[in-house]
Length: 444
Image (cartoon, rainbow, N blue to C red; front, side, top):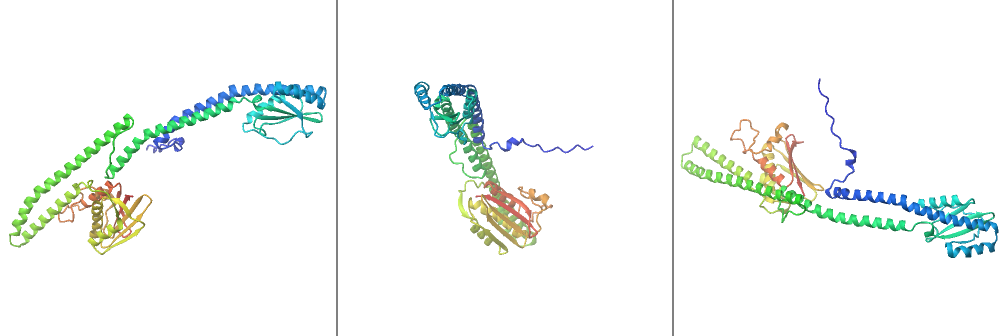
């Protein structure tokens, strides 16, 4: 029995909402515990301290209001009310007068913190048997309490600090300020730690595109410095490898050119015959092969980057090749590249299209971050299974590997290396013309 296919592993849904950058994740790691701690501290403070103190103060005020109401009921007249006001105003910080209206207000005015109203309502309900109404929002420093006594309404004005603990807001203020201060310190610290990693990433990207990394110097934490030094050592090893390859092939080419020159001179002195002409053709093929090997091995990183118009460069290449090539463009095609290297890569691609087909069509357009270039021909094309091999060096699609076949299997490989050195890509596909399509993507 065949085993059931494994289901693809699904990532937890929470990862979709987590930050992707190092800065965001580091900030989350630091700020999340701080925020949780502040919330827990604030919750226990309000639950265990602030609400308890506020409830006690509210009960005290409600009891004072209840006492005044009971004393007023013993002799409900204006003189009695004035004496009560004179008695409680200096000692209890409480004043009482008749309300101009003989009915309680019906409009409800709620405080921003609903727990304030809830605590005071519970205290008044526990101490008063008469109907009451209060407002904690109309005055910034006082609270308006009104009690219905028979046909009259008594209006009490109480200082806010007698009803609610004022330290709660001060505590919240300093809690928020401490959170803001810790957040700023965390952001500055994380930025300082992430900056060396960003510099290392930019240096690696520049090196991958064949550009100069500038005055890059490892900095930051020990691990980041270690990664920076490892990158510089890797860059030096790759540079030495390229230099050794170039020097080796240049030496081989130089050593082979001397006997080839003697053979050419010897054959030039011979009479023209079929055998001599074939020998001369073989020598020319050998020289072309040596030039191809040197082009493949040549290091283009020393060429300076410059801004060129890709349309003008393509027009120069097309003029060098033939008139059967059609060029169409779209948008501004200015790009920062190594002109000689890019010209060699595009020349190889266009030359292949012209050689294997009778009609070549080139289209270039500018995207947001890249320039897209397609080269189509109406030749025989390349089978899908062989397209990756066609980009490898020293690979020719002629099974017999006949030396009379055009090229030495380096044209596409050289073009691919140059395009990749600029941070771009070269892919092969089917052409609408019936042959091969080369798709080149270069970063702006």
